[in-house]
Amino acid sequence: MKFSFIGVIDVIGSVLYLIFFQGIAYFMLNLTTVLFLFTSNIIFLITTFVFLKYQINKYSDITKKRKPDYIYHSGLLTAGPGIGYIIDQAVMRHSKYLTWLVLFCIFLFFSLFLSHVAAKFFL
Image 1 (tube, rainbow, N blue to C red):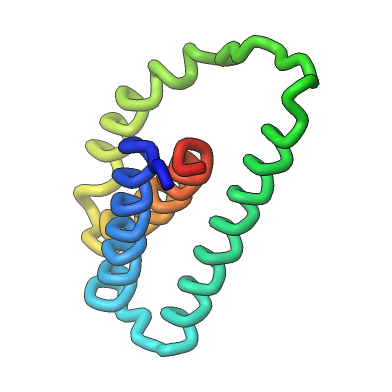
Image 2 (spheres, rainbow, N blue to C red):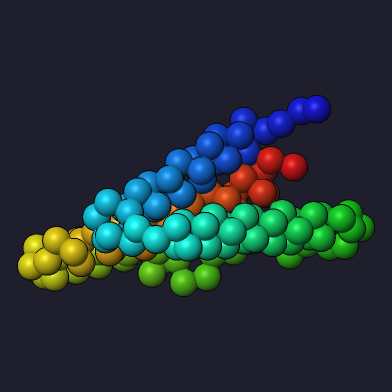
């Protein structure tokens, strides 16, 4: 069985970001319930399964014409780091809890994003 290098790296990255996500929740945000940890793992597995099912259904019919991929609203993507820096300078320095909450959301996003990319390139 042959695996893609990008797919394997994204599986490892996705699991590591899930661990970071749960570590921030446990140590910094004091979400110490077993229910939260169990639920976050189940939601992660369900979304990964949905991503895999989507990719399998997308590429199951090879006769279907694909439209070219075009990034709409790419200006928003290039403005993202600048907007993030402004928000960080204006809001985050006033509250450590808010900083950890933003990192919590970012690690969750990266975990799900890498799970999606792994489902796309792993198969």
